[in-house]
Length: 216
Image (cartoon, rainbow, N blue to C red; front, top):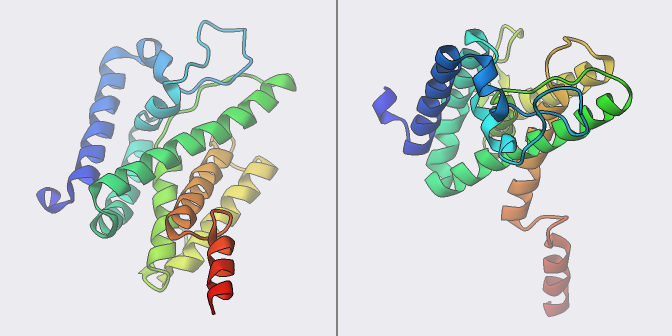
């Protein structure tokens, strides 16, 4: 089954597993320069560097964290890569990782400026939730199951529920220690990219409609 996966999805699974193994072998101290550190923190040895916007998305805080994200990548990445092709799929996934990281940087900067503790962010969740969003837009009626709902629901409803939960958890600080706004950032980035590819507002769709109306 693994060999039948499309190439980018398979490579991303291998890369995440390999980086997690490196974390286990080298320890957090040696891998900390590749975690996503907040802007404006002057209290520790580590600080934000541009490459962290990508590298943090291949690191994880524990085995269950890795397994959950890789399960989502396996379930939703393969069908999207089959539709988009390897190049566009990779562009989409990495953009969602970076978009999630930028959102987390903004949230982290605000927390540090308010006197909160600075802590690094790791995980592919922003990228894989971007995949969930993409799947919901491309296959809105396809039935999926999301924890803890014990039955299948349409993908478009699952996307709305996931987004609402991330927003609620982020605003209320439910389940602290999870970068809920990074999850939202990954989903927002995915939504914007798909609208850009489709030529929908705010990326020129209105202009196309106006040209069409003038030509009628």
